Length: 345
Ligand code: 13P
Ligand code: SF4
Picture 1 (cartoon, helix red, strand yellow):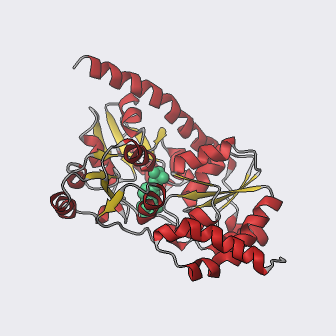
Picture 2: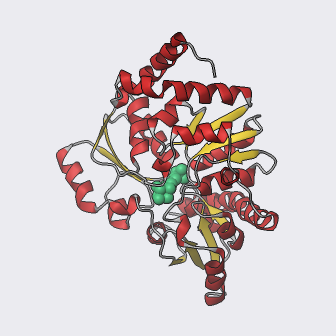
């Protein structure tokens, strides 16, 4: 690629404008400018769109990402966007979900990155659970592989989990793979929840003492946690919900100080996007999300290897899509049930 010194300077200026709020020095921006420039040019030439999950590093989110968001919103963006090639900067299961919703598009991941939750269960283990609890329904959190979604009755996300579980016809629900989300769910629905032993290495790392300490040190602070955290943490916060819900909460709240009990990428995003709000406390890095580097994205565009293309066995894909469609159906039914319950209180 032919790039002039003035192109690099312009790209450095663009990056610095976005990244200096996050502590990046001009020299840091200058060092990545040739790569982001090349990625952004190739992306236009190939009519590709780059989706960046909120847990990605700032160089990916702000240097090359066309859209930044949570797994669910990015998969929807992939569906609505006219580009035929999607580069999904995130862990593998999220790329798979985008492929399930966009079977005719080419979906690539920069790296085959795992996830402690998704890796905790496979299709055979779900089949064994079904045999062990024949009367229970199976709901899987979207943080799971396609083969697990395919064996489940319905999928759910962190934002519709209560509605989906409430709308399932069975009184007993096997909730996979997140044990902590399952325990939180037990406090929020009328169903009996059978959990699996998966956890998110990020969200299981927070403890109630840290949260209480921040509450004591910053009067008026609003504390937000992902429902993948332990119930003891969730009980202490002002809001528990997924990435998109947290973003809305902070956007709409008149408060000035927030603690985000979640992954550090989201904290970076809030610092970059809400200049008048202060984020306090600690965050934890997801080692899987952070595997993805600019060079991997460049490879996916320039010289992709077979592992970077998401492919799903057609039979598995069809059954996994059924589980995703069921989620949309149950979400609506669950909302009505919860509204009726609220009216009778
Ligand atoms: P979202 O579904 O909100 O994108 O969260 C993904 C995730 O990995 C949570 O730990
Ligand atoms: Fe998986 Fe947790 Fe990382 Fe999300 S943050 S990808 S759930 S390990």
